[in-house]
Length: 432
Image 1: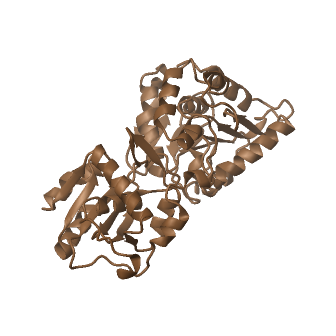
Image 2 (image 1 turned 135 degrees about the horizontal axis):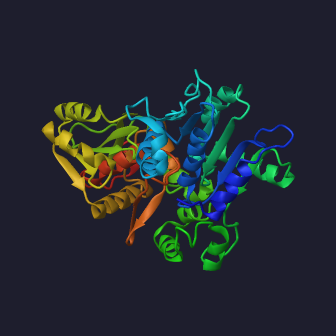
Image 3 (image 1 turned 90 degrees about the vertical axis):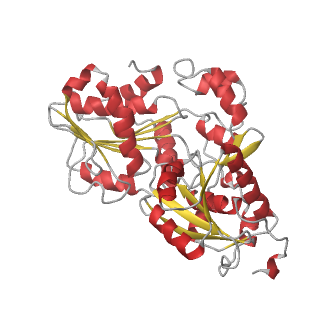
């Protein structure tokens, strides 16, 4: 799998040796580039080189936005690359059990994954730490789990790789600022910084601009694919994904703050005398799930917890107490729970993409018109603050993958409202 020129440039510079110390010139390497530009191959080449080409046992720790996503990338993206490579002969064992995910080489070196916590790296040394998808981090806990574990390793390096994020991407935004200053200073040591991004104010729709700033164009990407994405994606999403531009809070706030605050009511409760509908949604990496309820006039977040194993039993309890039906996105992450829910004897509606688009429009309209009250919770507030959407024909649906926050609670609320009775057009004061 030959490296593209920009990948080769990053590795050639990032792995430079300081002639005075004989060690790596750069203890930290920061790489930001648009999506689908070969980031996975770049990082995994670095990891395998460290494990195969060093005589001493090396520990490589790979981390993504969540522990579950890091596990998926190691086992579903990176492991297959090795399996179809002559380097597979260098692998001794692959552990896939949760909590032990790792690739162990015959020379004793290891690639393992790290959870997103300050304690994840405690108890062992780290020779190469990789922080992938850094845009998702609002703090430096991943770095804090790795850097202290590198202190006794003179050849240790920290590599940070990501597409730009949002105003909430506190960690990456700070690293970007640090990296740009390091590039301007050009000391040749300390921090190496690489950035490919379309400058703000440039003609982002001009293919000539794409050829200048998208390094994989003509290699693994085509102008047609970029043009199609521009036509179908929300512009702010496209600029972040393909322009590598950090989005601004104002542009990503789909539900304006004033509208959201106007429908908040900490005392609002779903009424027992009305038909109740429950919406269920699951985060794409299955790290969390949510159940919301609505009677058409009030939306209430019933449960928002880690994992998915609790959902079916909780839903059964809600049905016993409240009756009602359950709604999921038939093409979304929660679809896999449909069989378990139905096995509990529950009535489950699986919405098609067209029906989901109608549900999202209904949610937006009812919030904007003040026809529904929302019981206030921090989880819903956070979900709405980072909410993004993507077009589906002439309509839209909420986008789980590009939202700046976990929108699982808000998607569940949207699904709950979707099949609830039509709202009575009463002024807010009449039912709060």
